[in-house]
Image (cartoon, rainbow, N blue to C red; front, side):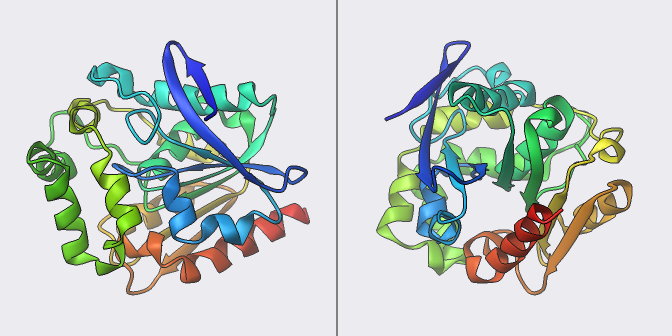
Length: 261
């Protein structure tokens, strides 16, 4: 099982696909793991053309799970991605992330843009909630996770039966709730607004129209010079990931178009 080390935090990654293809880093959502890219068909769809670098984010999967909230700050999470690229002697890669992984894409645009040819960001926007304001997601998620991972799994599948599989249950139940709480208890304000006009590499931003993040994701598009924005009608936050038969054609089209430029 391959790992890299970022200041004593071990980060697990796996390599899939075409060893001669362009490298692409894939980063998953909150309380999930790199296995989700397999479960919902992303690996099978992209592996013939790309060298896929699947990462378990810190606090998730088989990566280390620090319990200090400060360890989960964005600059550390971006450094995890860079450490994997350095370990593999890759100077530049494409990036794809969804939800928490999409949030990481904004961090990459701020802290390490020179390491990426393109960014694919799903289910996320760059507008941080001021520290003096309440974060609705954290207000909801913290008490749920304190009930344990079974409560989290039951909540997810109640709204989205597509997640009710043995593979997905194993991913959720393998989480350390204390590590997830450490991330949720970490509140930082990172200003990405000034970064948006500086994103010169191609960026694909896609969001379900029923996602609560939709309006803010759409708002940021006017400030990014080289962006492709995709609205996904009738899809909420979860569906805009697991409905890969809808999402993947947009991703593949985007990648094929930038490869010709």
